[in-house]
Image (cartoon, rainbow, N blue to C red):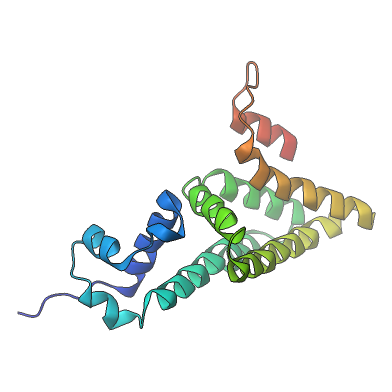
Amino acid sequence: MAKAQTPRGAWVEAALQALAAGGPDAVRIEALAAQLGVSKGGFYWHFKNRAALLEEMLDHWERSVVGDVIVEVESSSEDPRAKLRHLFQMAATAPELLPVELALRDWSRRDDEVAARLHRVDNRRMEYLRSLFAPICADEDDVEARSTLVFSLFIGSNFIRADHPGKGRTQVLQTALA
């Protein structure tokens, strides 16, 4: 009987987990193979080399945090306010994305190609936020300010370790977003 091949997506997911845990240097073929319980030969069935895996890993991340999110939010409602609430709910219920996001942001400080990709992703995210706020805000400056504040909350609030007397972090964020 032929041995089942490890799916390409499993390699990408393992690479993202390794990135989140230890940065780009932790994305090593041997370590991923060990984590998946397979030989590293299976890796070369799917990828030419480590660089190809890193590229696909970044492509997958970009699709999942921008393209897939926009598709889901757009399919949820016609109302911009409802779309915003849905987007906020998605962000609040996906804590597993945060370690990858933070690792990519750290990596981008040392790698110009990753920095360029992150710049593109952040611009797409801001464009989408603007498209959601524009129908409900009369002023262009208000649209930009709200989009920037919301995006800053999604990313920046993860770096703040302050206490919120009598309230949890999630509750404070929900109040701020409201």
